[in-house]
Image (cartoon, rainbow over all chains, first blue to last red; front, side, top):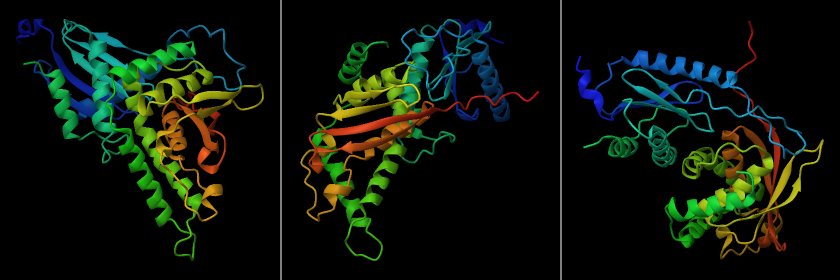
Length: 157
Length: 202
């Protein structure tokens, strides 16, 4: 083990989970994490999806807004669920979009502004994946331009 | 995002600093070509060149729907608006952020309907419509009454809102191209889609 080399800020990996809990994208950008086989990644995605859904429902509900018009359509209160998870050697930042897609960013604990980084990944996703006419919604992402744009943003020289 | 002025400011900011822009006429002409081609392709059964305008409207709506399903991600990523707390707020965000950032127009939210017992609905009145610039309807006596030229926008809104758990119904009620005084779309909330967790079955 050479964990003393990981004291600077590093973005290790990005996972994208669709709204059904399936892993649709998985890419490592820097060495440092132990290798998982692809089946483990699928299990990780599915398990995290379930835990995240539970964490959303145990969140205390925010107070109802005062100016609500007559509630002809009552709606479940908005909660975010798990946003980050830390261990001694990495931090996992989770960003769930309003559409239900989850972006999981693995970074070193020293990495600052992970929320900003993960949001930028979402922007790149919107531009290169969703606007690609040959990408099928909810399916695994195999889009070369997306990978290039991500690498350009996340891989530090 | 409580007030409409906040939405207006956000829309302005996103439009100025975060989106790539193209010449508006390229969009107008491209869209016009699509509609004209559909009018040529979709004909009434057993006729060679009588356009089935209902089919054109439906096809435009379907195309818009598929655009909306994808466009919502771009919208959320670039605008960074959170979840709306009410359908009224949704209306403001669609008009002042959504239309602003993609088409650089701000349709007016009007005829709000939120009475108890009735579905919530609002109108979007387009003072300018970049899609319909330069358009004159064909002189077949039917287009004026049957074609909704900008129907793709209804589909876009329907698709986009479906992805954020709102089932809505959208259609145009007036269009200056048909000789009306205004161009207005009506958007009605059918229901919020609660698809998250099935009730537990322990």
